[in-house]
Image 1: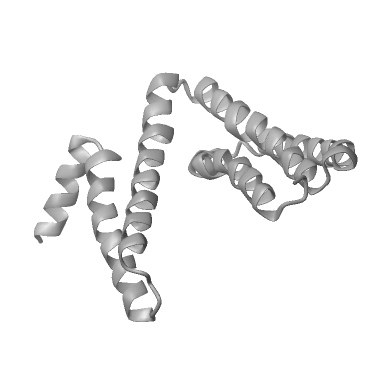
Image 2: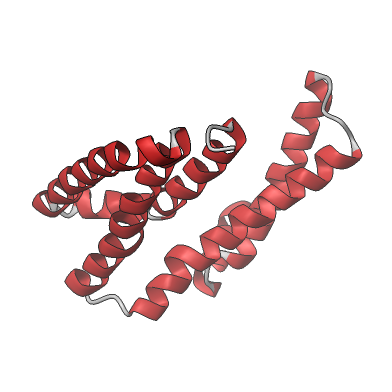
Length: 164
């Protein structure tokens, strides 16, 4: 069980979720020249990943290496980066959580569930079926993203640009 590929893949997917959710925030920190903070985060993450990998591989095998990736990414990318961002730029944590995490995550989850539903009812066994399902998921997902992940002013700007 400890070296099952599916377990390792699930752990790694969970490990990279915080990095994915905060990728725009990280780019914002780079764009505002907060390079020393980001360099420190990356160095600390590397040291923790190596140390934890060496410590956990003997006990849990490949799954231990996956967990060794999960822990520092969650702590540094999932907690330290958002806290630093909110503190440095005076973002209210609740607003940041809602606008930068909850709404984009909801859109991604909706697109994922929609794709599962589409592929469950019609097996994408050929390229035309696959591309049609992808187009449907994209169109519905884009509408959902416009409705959920944007505020009223952004939606109005979007509709004004579409009307041209």
